[in-house]
Length: 492
Image (cartoon, rainbow, N blue to C red):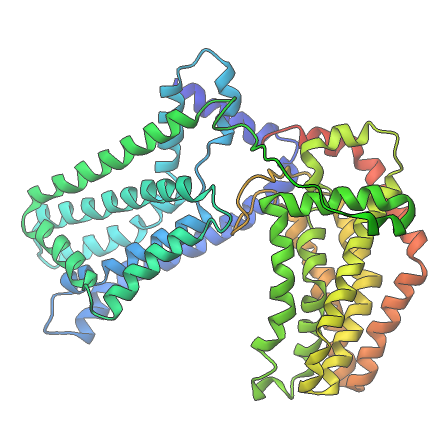
């Protein structure tokens, strides 16, 4: 059965409609994986001689044990935001005559051999080998290494338990932040020295190898808890079904002022406000609005106008970037139904454009108080806003015609990369790098004012040729219509 599951995983990878798009992302992620592997290898080989040089009178192994508490906290926090339990990938199996126990064991087994669990080995094994080379007891060192591997797996399954209980909350990341932050604070203020407690535990395991049984028991408990939790939820009609909520209808009468695109704007606004994933776009408005406060109060940046445009584009275009990069994937759950209706594609896209353009205007107006830091800041924000409306709105809509990744709107928003493909990485080049490069060159060769005027001219040209640009973008969507429908129908 396991062989059959692995065969299905292999076929799902290569037969997905998004394979061509996601392959580029997978290659990029492969480079990151190699990068982190090399870092961990370097740490593994350099740890013993480095500690021996810094603390010649102390045992490097005990020093490492004393800092394992911080590794456990960091690993748990990192996993929560980047490691997800692959439950949805086995959803089609629930209609087949396969016992749920086998499916659950496969899901948990697949999670146990993830990259997050393999990566620490590249530091543990070299460090352990150096300990053996320096005449440490072989059996004790091997048990200590096994203890770290078991700890990694315990963290792995603890993360899924925390995720399971926090998934229902609006601020789903709050429980893990409170847990890790609270433990760190207790240790930092020396209320409870977890650093010494954890260090003593692993020192004891090294001195008395039989104590590793406690870690084995803890791992079995964690696995069993995850098994029961997942076994209870693994039903098409309960745990995995789309969450249904009763909502209050909002008064969106003001949208009727936008004519024939009003129904689409109402749908978009309701979609944004009623779903966890899209609602993050609204909270990002506050982040974008306050982003300049990170840089402008610092005198270092007062003579660096290059940053003014970067902050202006991000500050006025944060909704444009965060919402627009996933058009039309936001509607992927009902895209087939939407495309079967008697509607004009151009109206559908125009509603997205209008929302993004309005957000840029709103953020610029709310950001006018930045003039406190100088008129150049406000002028740069104005130029960036015009550029965002005239150029970046069209660029991001054009990029959406290449989207082939489905989005589950019910999933939590914090650090959720579902639906992210090569398009989302590449679209950043014309959105941010090109205007910054143009501004930087003209600012260096001529002046700050001329550089800003160029961005304004480009933005105005985009507004003037808006109708032609939208017709071209509509044609691109029409050409990709059935490819997107096919891709959005798939779970991978």
